Image (cartoon, rainbow, N blue to C red; front, top):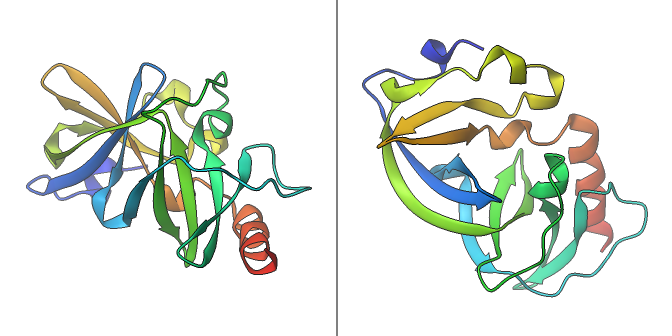
Length: 162
């Protein structure tokens, strides 16, 4: 991945930051439809392990992905800070369950570096880069790459079948 091609160095990125454990992640704010409190989920049989279930959000059935499970992190208990970030991934609306949403911030693109070579590969295609801000490191996610094409198709089926 060539970070220089992904961002204009003069660009200011607007990001929604969130926590999974002690790590800070971020998404482009333009990919976020809304952020909601965690709600009861309906489990759907034969879905990938990282799909916690579906929710009914104002008449729309939306699959919810547990980003802890997706990223291979240890499961944690739901708390009052647990949130679902509703995003659009290639015309499929999904919820991303996170430990807490931190803030919306502006990050100069020239402070973003490519991910270290040790974390690159097929399993980490969804990492766009690492941003530095006031001594903090933010992992920038490419929401479009969190799911494979097969997984997107399967979740589209869950959305329409439920």
